[in-house]
Image 1 (cartoon, rainbow, N blue to C red):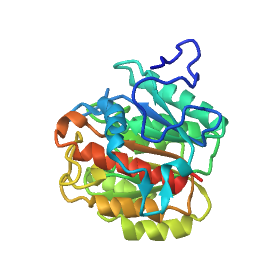
Image 2: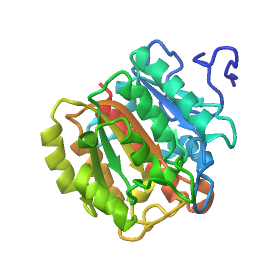
Image 3: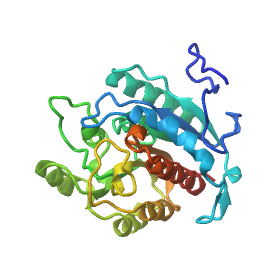
Length: 294
């Protein structure tokens, strides 16, 4: 087992278990898997900082072949860089570090695939992408709007991540799907400013994909877009969500997009002793790799 160098934060050495099919040569990798083990602002049930590692561990139960896209994991090259060593309890510094790491990987020509962690981690990754690709489109799949100005006095909150992103990314570039929870003010803001698609995912997504065309895209999936029947292991589960089958179909529906970054967040393993949340998350990552990486 290798230990990450603290002298060089971009040393491709990695530690711990890796996602199934990961290669061990950074230069040869087209994509980078990395963990963002943070739940410093979780507002209900904590534990998402343990999500990235457990998703890796359960991935060993996956087949490397996807019958959905008729590809093998060996058909794509990616390296699992392990978890970014985030400073416990410091969200501002953590977001800055995520931006730094993701920016370096993008500069090296890699597509970053992040595992959360609470949803606030997406802010750092999108900052890194936006500074290099200003016309990037954000596709956001979630049970919640994440459009609060603040939560209990804190602007830096997982419940406000899309609002923080909207402070620099034009709202016309933000596409939201599956939303079914939030304040009246958040829903009004979404309907007035973003491409807002509450309750449904697949049909509005297909229409959006046709409109987006070849514009660069960052995709962020909060696992709670799924109904708790499919993913109970998340901090703020919300009834009335979509099925895992529909979310897999949504990933495949985005096959023609130019994806420059992806993350999957809010998996809290301790809240799901059945492991079904972690298992569906691993499968979603497999399908994302096979769909978005050439």
